Length: 341
Ligand code: G3P
Ligand code: CA
Image (tube, rainbow, N blue to C red):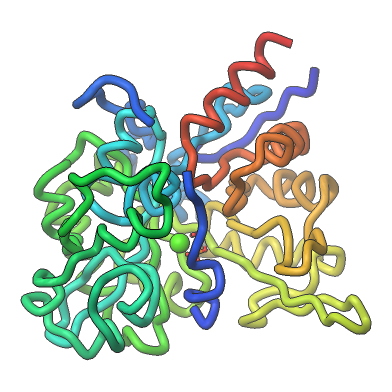
């Protein structure tokens, strides 16, 4: 049995690209998810403690692999909406992942795509609409049409939620894994986001992680509040002819070329990395060695978006510390089965 010791929180174009994830239950209504993993913040003295690493914990086998509900339990309910969040809570997700965009009037809302066409009955760019306009939209009926086997009349007419509404509704009862999305469009979202997570005591209580593909966005947040745990998302494009890999935003070189310095650069501001497993054509972009390398640098390793049981089991055996999934129930089952073996 492998035993890993990890200092970690057990814890766009691409936007449209990875958009339609999941098709995808629930436990007891109102049941709370696991207690937050972050410890109380002591006055940071060492540099690494300034990166939210007071969240350090041991990760032992698969026990602590975090179940991250991708856009809520989006395989079971319309992504980013109240039913998806409630289902994720019922399914004991450790973290609830939400993509955050900015409205025309500067409000932060939970929404994945740059356009509202796919996941609402509206049209156009989300950033061209005010919050009031967006609240008029039906963000649930599309799910019933797309996934008739999961359809529920309660999903009809559900609203897009602002981040503040979500914090108001769930407070410190859940853990939020929020993403600064499409920062080339949402230019000023970091400051209001940090203010909001501070206002709702989510940092000191260990209820929040902020993630982004955009390293400059994470750096900005780190400057605003170094206690917020940050995760650098990574996406590599694979050249179909040569098979060569290139990181989308040039945050890192290809996984096999990443040096100790590259990992340490990320560690300057983040406590973890969030890579994908496969390119669209099925090419796997990461392997066990890459996971282990990141782990040797005490970086959390949260891989997205994994819905197949075989992949979940394989990744857990590679040593990942968390998995984003549209089906939190499925990941819990895999973990339980592995424990029994
Ligand atoms: O945040 C991890 C994963 O959600 C990244 O992909 O496109 O679903 O936000 P996306
Ligand atoms: Ca996301």
